[in-house]
Length: 352
Image (tube, rainbow, N blue to C red; front, side):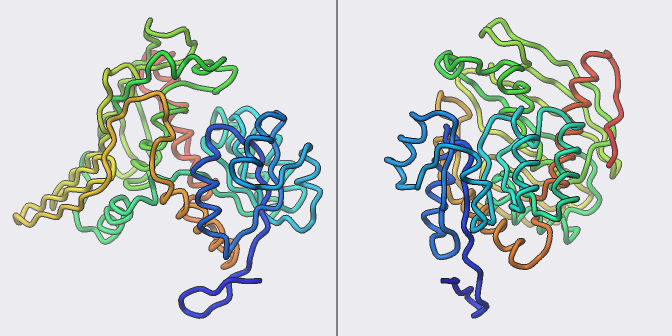
């Protein structure tokens, strides 16, 4: 039966299939339980029999033993894909061809070219594509986005992000973790991408970058775990990006934005705004240290907002605020940062 929104408008109940039952499942599973009046999990699939059995036991989801059992079910209108980055292109193409709307775990793909092709596949099929960038849906981030949209900080002059995290040896003990073959990228694509996406969501796309990129001797990986970059934004502002997973014991990520009327600091989920008039705004929120072997140790409430926005967009026949096309900005900036390190100089960020 359809659920009812607070204003009395009937909201369609969706039938959803899940593809991928690994580490990323937990916050989505909890969110889907919360949204049971709007969505029913009709099928859950992973190539691993062990993961299927674990998911069925832990969450009570009906598990199936083939992808076709998800995509071939005409009653399923939406698919949540929680699979590794290299598989995204084929999985999204198959889902779109089967008429499914897609909510895709970050990143879109391993590079901007593949990501762009993936977005265009969904657009040609007329299917909604949203990306799991839950940092955009934190209350403090939503408040800051509103202030910036209203011009409360004036003209933006400087925008920077600091992600100085630590990942211990046990984090990299999982086979293939930190390798290009499995993850498609290192700290930029795998860890810092959430904060970098939020940065661009707040201040707009980057136009040029210059970066140093390194792989430390701390772990046996072939992707970057230390990045220092300078950024010029399309709006004329400049800033820095400091992203790493080698900083023991790990520190809270920060976004700092300075404008002609004041400055804002977003540290995890705490927002501080200081105006040149002396007015001050402070919104306290959850904190995190930036360390630990379990990257999923956080509240699922922001994932719930991601899912709700996805269903709202489908029901209202509009693009979600975390659309696939909006997610291309961070993919293009990451590509440019890596290219700058290879070419040892400034690199223009591809424009859509």
